[in-house]
Image 1 (cartoon, rainbow, N blue to C red):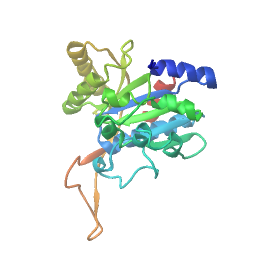
Image 2: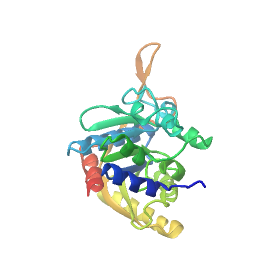
Image 3: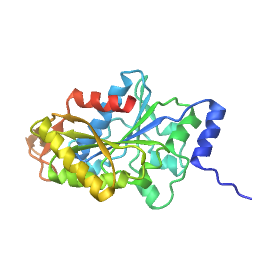
Image 4: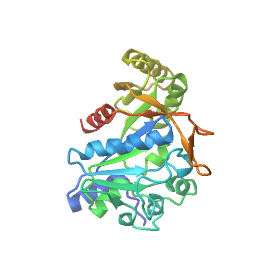
Length: 270
């Protein structure tokens, strides 16, 4: 007779064997552009590691969606998508950057899930199996689909980062619906980025809060407003080596201050 073992049962068994706790998986869903989202995840990981935490940053945004980045933050040989289809061991897909920071790409996982090649166990369980001692997995994303996020862990902490304009708030409401399956017993944390002042940021949050309550019956909480500034984007013309505004995609990007990373890491470690 075949016995199906749930992820929670397997995690409990691993704790009994190795005496280790599952790491905390932090899904940072962002309505910002792809490049800014990657930078906010990287900055958050850097902030957490300053407090002697062992942090794994998972980079899942494909290169085609990046406008100002020519490659991944750090080169890796294998992708987590290949780990979840059991093609390579986890240890070969994770790169240790320094004493407290690890990095992995996961751009292939969505395709593996779509074609039903991806297999459990989840990433937090695999990390215990490898005895890597990771405290936090930071997973920044612009598309927090539940079936994708679920591969990273059984206990997901959600944080939503959004600008306060109407288009961003509309996108944020869609993300709230996508993430409603996680942490149903506590409000989802929200950070508002940019805007004229804190009052404008608070007003934007209240609009999102009212929409979440009426449309989704979901509670959210504001953990901060960040006075980020925007900068004009430029791209390099390889023919004459001149810098020009991008021909497609966002014309501006957020420049996130250090206060942003302190606020988000304080929420994570609280």
